[in-house]
Each structure stands twice: as C-alpha cells, then as structure tokens.
Length: 209
Image 1: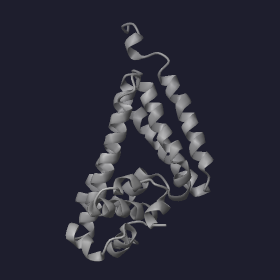
Image 2: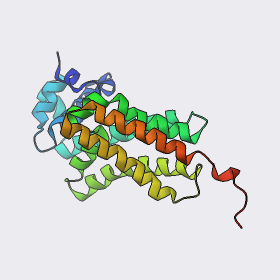
Image 3: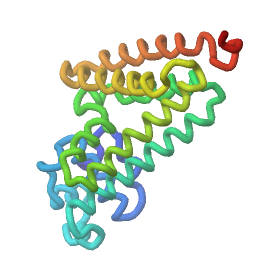
C-alpha cells in the first residue's frame, strides 16, 4: 500500500496524471498530515513512488513545491464551488458546502480540515506564499458571502465568516477529541442555521418603511 493511499483519498484524485501531478498530490498529503517543517523532498519522492531526482526536475526548491500545492488546492476549491453553483437555491448551495466537511469527517478527526490545516501551515511561510495560501480561505468565505447575500439583509460578510469559523471550529474540536461525530453534529447544526437565513429571502420582503 502506498503512502498516498494512507491519507484517506483527500488528495489522491489529483495524483492520477504524470509524475508532476503525483508529486504535488503526495506533497499535499504529507504537508497536511505532517506539516511543512517535517516534510522533506525525499519524503515526497518516496510517497509519489518516483526517483528523488524527479522532484528537482519539476521543483527546484521546497517553496516551489509548496506553491504548486497551493495551486492544486485553489483548483480543488474552485471545482468544488463551481459544482455547488449548479444548485438552483443559495441555501442548498450553502448546505451542500458544509456537508463536504461531514463527508470528510473521518480524516478530519485524525488530521483536521484539509483546507484549514494547510492554510495554517502555509501561513507560517514567507509573505508571498502566506498571501497565496490566504487567498484560498478568502475565496471560500467570499463565495459564502455571495450566497448569504441572497438570503438575508443582515451583514453577509459577518455571517459568512461566522459560518466558516463554525466549520473550522468543528473540525478543530473533532480532531482534538478524535471523534468524527463532532464534525457531523456541527454540520447538522449549521444546516438548521442556514434554514433560518432562508426563511424570508430579502427579495420577498416589501420595501423598508
């Protein structure tokens, strides 16, 4: 069994291409589970089942590889949000989003949220890489904000941050307690909360007096 399969498949789907794709997917997996400092290029080569020299052919430095992982995550997040956009109702889009974390509850209980854990790791790097990683989380929060704006006249930015913070808090507690049920419970709570936003959409309200 390869190391890549030990990660519960969170990034495995991105390693089905050539050597470069396998290296990036393996790096994402190792950075997620072990952190940036504890992961070497040799570790990545071994997990991707390629010769160490192949790592340096594609990535001259560890920062180059980390940047590729950030790009992969950006693509992963973008594809996820594009899929959710096909749902006709903004409340259902938001509920489908939070359900993604329930689907990952087992791996989250072991290693934390893939997005949050890697963003925190990358935030410790140099300013350029940290800024690129910050964009991943901001992109998701801004998407949530747009959906919330369709549902309520309340501060959409504040509510979007509240929702994402609740997801990340649930993931952190699930990992701390090693209990996937914590993540599932938080998702169910958020689904009910989203329903309260959707009770009276802003476009159905009359003009304010």
